[in-house]
Length: 295
Ligand SMILES: Nc1ncnc2c1ncn2[C@@H]1O[C@H](COP(=O)(O)OP(=O)(O)OP(=O)(O)O)[C@@H](O)[C@H]1O
Image (tube, rainbow, N blue to C red):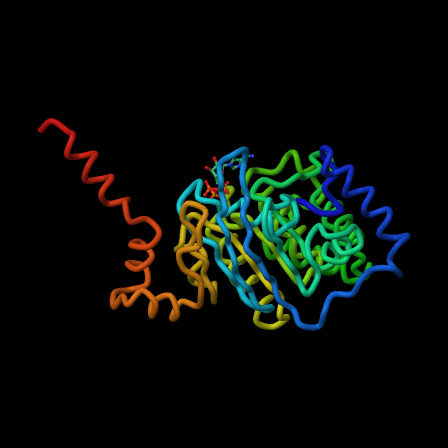
């Protein structure tokens, strides 16, 4: 995962340096405002000359569960990377709880203390055990020691990892690695969770069920803000209270389920509406495929 505990590559080294300074400079840190909100303001992101996000502006209130959905390759991960401060957009900016991402080391550190980003395929220390990893991440986020130990065990139980908790992560299956990665994001107690494809990567139905309930309760009971991406609307729309539909780098719809339904003027079911808005060409592609078949 990103953030102070990512130890791989250049980004990891910078983050470790940042964490070192974090301890030194805590007193100087700017404070996040009480008014908690994520603002994405006129963000344009290019890879080379190709624009992948085009002038995206969205405001996500605290305590909401927002799903970013859209077909493959349309900019969901890019949007989350910009929100996570991994990418610096060519135009526009992202503000989290009153602080602008990447505007200064101090602002960035303060944001990172309260915001966790879990990429789709995150860094995991393969030679460490799952429990060791969770305890280390909790410590890095300065969660109280007693709480970390208890919380780690509850997460291991929740995701049915207790039997392998003290084995090296390299011995875990793909789904088990995803579960330990998700647990590492939750154990930080961060108030904002940015999760790229949290339901992918081989999670079994029990894991999907556990994660859905966990995210729902974290937002409802603890006012945590959750932003998650998925190319499969069914996986996230049930638990999301807000949806961002993104196509070709542009936001084609944003709002609560009711607002999106109202804006579209659709009278059909929500899944039919999503199919029309997110994958309008899917059925046509199937028809075209079979049209070319010789009987
Ligand atoms: N590092 C990169 N360099 C160049 N192009 C990139 C890079 N990362 C992504 N892209 C391109 O940007 C576009 C958006 O990619 P992105 O990963 O944001 O899509 P996505 O909606 O998350 O897709 P998926 O559902 O497949 O994960 C794609 O066309 C992709 O090829």
